[in-house]
Image 1 (tube, rainbow, N blue to C red):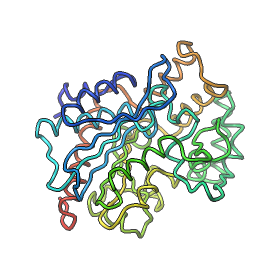
Image 2: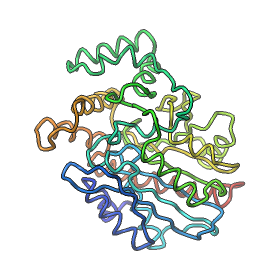
Image 3: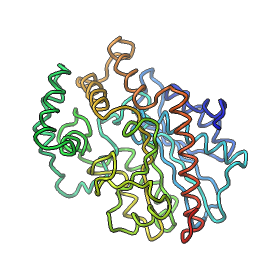
Image 4: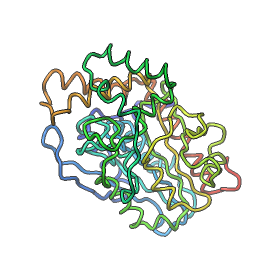
Length: 365
C-alpha cells in the first residue's frame, strides 16, 4: 500500500530533509524561505519554508505544519513531501475554492540539533501566551526540578514514581510537561516573550489573511501515545464550535485532553491557541500525534538532552552527544518501515477527512 518511493521522503537529518522538501515543493509552487540567524551543528544555515498552493483568494485553507518540536520535523517533513507528491501526480486534488499552506520545519534549529526546543531553549508549543500578563506557575515542576536534572537515572525515576503515587499520573505529566516559564535550562520551557517561530506564524496569518478564511489546521507531531498510531488531538475548549467541528470532521477518533480522553494532558501556551483566536465557525485545529515509545522513555530521553545542553552547545562529534542525539532521533522518528508506513497512511486519511470537511462541512465523508 505504501511504496518504497514514498518512504524515501523520510530523510536522516535537517540538511537532507530541507533539500528533499525543496526539490519536491518546487514542482508544485514557489516555497518562501524564512531564515534564522543561528546555525546547525556543522555550521549550516537554517530556515523554515512556507508554501502556498491553490487559489490566492480561496475561501478555505488546509494548513499543514511540521517541526514545531524540531526533531519531530524529520517525520513531519516526510509527510508533507508525501502530500506534495500526491498533489503533483493527481492522486490527491484540492477541492474547489480551497488552498493549502504548508509550513516546513517551524523550528529548523531544533531539527538540525535534534532537539525539541529552539535555540533559546523555548518549547514553541508552550510559547503562545499573552506575555503582557503574569505567566502561570507550575508548582509541580518546582518540586521536581532538582530531580529532573539528577544524573542518577534510577533515583530520578524513583522520585517521579513517588510523585505519581502521591498525586496521580496526570499530575506528574502536567508537572513535567505541562509548561513552565522560569527555568530556561529545563524542559518544556515556554519563554518570557514570543519566540522567533511564534512571530513567523503570526506573520503568515496576516500575510494570507487567514482570519478571513475557513481553516483546517493539522500540526504534525511524534513521540506520544501508542506505537505508530496517529492520534487526532483537539485542544479547543470542550463546548466550543472548534471541538464540534473537529468531531464532525474526524468522528470518534478525536481525543480531548481537557476531557481526559487523550494521551496528552492539558498544557499551557500551545500553538493551537493562536489559531483558535482567529478561527470562525466551521474551522478547527488538531494535532496529529504519532506515538512511538512510552512516556517514561520520552521523559528520560528529553531530560538527557537537557542535561547535555545545560552548559551550552555540546561538541557534536563527542560520543556522549552522539549517544543522546541518536536516542532523540530514534524516539521521535523511528527508522522502521512499519512505523513510517503507519504514519504515511494515517496522514493521508486525516488530510482526506480535513479536505472533505472543508468542502462539505455539513456532510463530511
